[in-house]
Amino acid sequence: MIFIFIVSVFVVIHGITRYQRTGSAYKAVYLSKKHVAYLEKYFDFFNKLPPQSRKIFTQRVASFITSKKFIARNMESVTDEMKVLISASAIQLTFGFPNVQLSHFRNILVYPDSYYSLINRTYHNGEVNPRLKAIVLSWKSFVEGYIHDDGRNLGLHEMAHALRLENKIMNEEYQFLDKAALKDWELRATRTMKEIEDGQESFFREYGAVDREEFFAVAVENFFERPLEFVEKHPLTYNTLRQLLKQDPVLLEKL
Image (cartoon, rainbow, N blue to C red):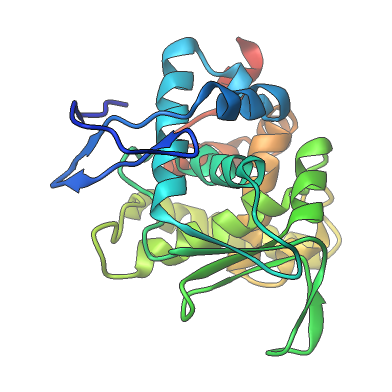
């Protein structure tokens, strides 16, 4: 993965350097040491990366932060720690795509806990709303997702939904997912969802059988949280997702 960086004047706000896009190039951006410390303390994916990849990761996190509006709901503010870790979950998923920032989704709404949705009149931990250009997260559920490697991760789950939608929205990031790999993925997803419904599949949780979008999100959770078990039980499905996301968590486990 190669970034083209343009050295220029940096505008620093709260220790995070802003970026501007010029064609396909970005000005160099950096997190402060304080913000990098959040990743080192809480983000295992980041710590497993080789040094040069960690540098790229932090730059992309900084770019993501400055490209979004973080909105607090039912709490005072979205802290820098929240911004860094939520952004890191997006970069974890999109790390194989250097120019993908989920640009359609400009708003990140953060609730302290589960919240009541007036749209479908039920409580949620997270959702993605393309009409409002928003990714919505419960901070409590987000944190719990990164504490346990059990194949349930709210941040990755909602970012996976945003990724699929971003691929379909006609903007500068349109159709970045490989069409052949995507076609293969849809076929494998359909088969596995049927196996879940028939009780023949236990690695993926039942929620993955709701529809193809939910299966993709559930598969992404397991791809990053349980890659060794995933590739052992579903090698072909894992390989298709590896090709689709252009990264391989199994390699990180073996470093």
